Amino acid sequence: MTAVSTLRPTGPRQLAGTGTLVRFALRRDRAMIPIWIGVNALMVLSMPNTLKGLYGTSAERADLVRQMETNPSLRAMVGPVFDDSLGALTAWRVGVYAGAVAAVMSLIIVVRHTRDEEESGRQELVASGMVGRRASLTAALLTAAVANAVLALLLTAGLAGQGGAGALALGLGIAGVGMVFATMAAIVAQLTESARLARGLTAGVLGAAFVLRAAGDSATDDGSSALTWLSPIGWLENVRPFAAERWWVLLLFAAAVATQAAVAYELAGRRDVGMSFLPTRPGPASGRLGSATALAWRLQRGSLLGWSIGFFLAGVVYGGMTDGAADLVGDNDNAREIIERMGGQSGITDAFLSAMIGMLGLIAALYVVASVLRLHGEETSGRAEPVLANAVGRLRWASGHLLIAFGGSVLIMLLAGLGFAVGHGKEAGPILGACLVQVAAVWVIGGLAVLLHGLAPRAAVAAWGVAGAVLLIGWVGPALDVPQAVLDVSPFGHLPKLPGGGMEWGPVLVLVLVAVALVGVGLAGVRRRDMST
Image 1: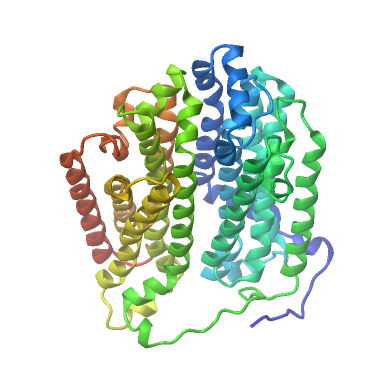
Image 2: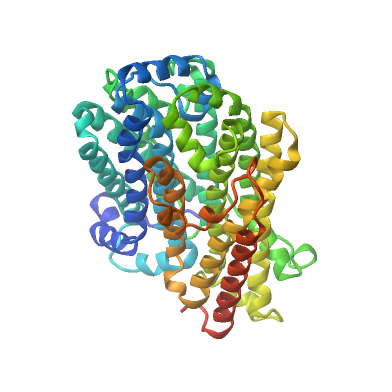
């Protein structure tokens, strides 16, 4: 139920303590924010050299542009290309994904320092001091702004050699996407009582923005579709960095950020701490919630449903563009080598399928980390204690969430395989097998998250850093032709290249055993240590 406060200080008093809260937020996120920024910046800044190796001459780059104009499936994946310079190709190749990563970073920061704080009870303690009513929201948005500003500066400085104006436009565009979703998360955090739901709803809007952009770009080759203009990610494309920049498009970001921030501030002033405008529906205390596993399912089913739909649709899209990707590679030996390093040397079609399946496996590692760390969230928020106060042991409580985490990773990869089969129109068996092989490496990442939660709960958030590093190795490593020893740091580097390659059971079984050992040690730590320490 929504509660409206009767005490509403006005003017500067509402922002009292903002500076202190910003410093506190930056201190708390001193590991998380640099990891997000570093991964995103490295993904973008490594691309010019990669593209130079792939398309070394202006004729090759011009031919790429011509092929993209007639390939709607690849435009749906990465967007249209507006010029054949290395800078413009960099913006085309990674701009969409860099904007999406900035958006995820920003929504996590804002929800973490608003609704998460209220849900844990810490915000009520902070509000009892000399802190203004809107100080926490302002601090969260300023923290997100600092993170996006640093990212924009790094990108501008790193790409300045390709053209200062284009580098600045790309940096500002990516930061603009981040701030649009930061302010959107600020609104959602006022509407919901659950930080989990706030993150999920904002991420859902991001997914919808990506789909709108993809649909619009597949229809036109110049980003002019109305669907593209409905998406903030589409705005980033239409800034056109390194290709006669459209500076006026940045005003769309500014207007959206200002409008959404104003709405968030108005909502924040009309409710009490801990309350929301969308009341939480009470659930039954028995029946379907009569066990720890049933409770874990109730808490995580929405997230699993979203990931499942996303993976199936991604499989359909990537499967549908397989033949088009083979045409795009053509006789380009460098592009062929990168795809073969990622997906094996069994033919360009199978190699592309294997590379895309491997990419979804890397993303599935993010799902398993998020699902495992739900244990950490339940514990630190104090919600685990009432459950454990009943006839529920710690292992039983933890096992319910881990069943959803590890079983859910199997489900989403199976659905991805079905999507590939539907999109590509080929036999489903080999593709499903290739998707299931990825689960062994996904489980290792999940096992590391369980280990950190069990033995060092304060460092559990480092599991995100592990997942991010693995994603970076799998995404950038083959393109940069890094040594095999670096690729082998990731558990995904030990998997057989399927479909097309030969199945090797040895590495897969070893990875499964490693995952089981990590989970076992982590659960032993959960059983032996004090809660919330």
